[in-house]
Image (cartoon, rainbow over all chains, first blue to last red; front, side, top):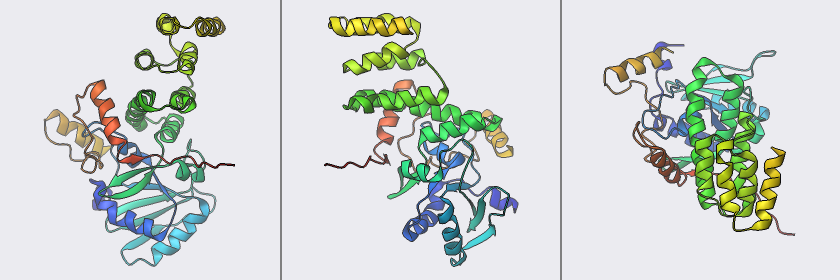
Length: 245
Length: 61
C-alpha cells in the first residue's frame, strides 16, 4: 500500500461523497473499527487514530458491493475475500482506503450490527455507525494494546448515556437497559461508584431503586435505603435484595 | 502506531496533532480535552441530537 494512501484519513468529510454513493446504492452497512469509536469520542482531539474506514456488511451484501464498486470509475478494488481467509475486501476511493468486512471478533452478527447501528450526521448525511455497546464488546474481546484508548473512550460515552437515560427516559425497562448492558459487557455485578452515585441522584421510579439495590457498590447501599424510606413496602423489598447480594 | 507516536510528540510539543480524530470537524458538540464530567454529559446530550438511535419497531394488535 502506498505510504500516502495510509495517511489519508484526517477528516470524515473526505469520505462523505463515498458514503453518499453507498447510501444511494441502497446497501445496508455500518461503520466499525477505529473510525466508529472516534464518532463517540466526546473530547476534541481524542486519541483515536484511524488510517482507514472499516465497514461491516452481511455476506450477500459484500458480493453486491464488490460488483457495484467495480462499476465505479473512482473506486479501485485491491483485495477480494479469499477462501479460508478473513472475509474482507479492500477498496480505494480516491486515496482513501475502505475495508469491507462481514465479521469482526466480538461483534454480533453483521445483520444485528447494521440493524442496531446509530445514525450520525455528516453535514446533513446520516451514516450508520455501529452501536457503542457493540463496539465496546468487540474491543473488550480483542483487547490489544492499541484498543485500550478505544475502550476508555467508549466507556466514557456509554456512562454518559446511562446517566442521560436516567434523566430523560420514562419507560422503566428503557431506563435500566443501558446500565444492565454495561454490567453484562464488563462482566460486573456492581456499577462503578461514581456512576452509581449519579444514578442515585436521578432516581424516579421504584424499579430504579430495585435495580440499584442489586447493583450499587457497598458504600452506596445506605443511599438506596434513604431513597426508599418513604415507602415501607419498597424498603422491605430492597432489604430483601440486599440480603441476596 | 507511528501515527500515534507522531500525535504524542505533537502533544508534548504543544502543536496540533497531525492525525486528529476524523470526526472533530464534523461534530460541533465536542468539548475541550480537560472537560469535566458534567461538560461531557452535556456534550452527550448535544451529540444525541445529531446521533439517532434506531427506534424499535412497534405493532398494535
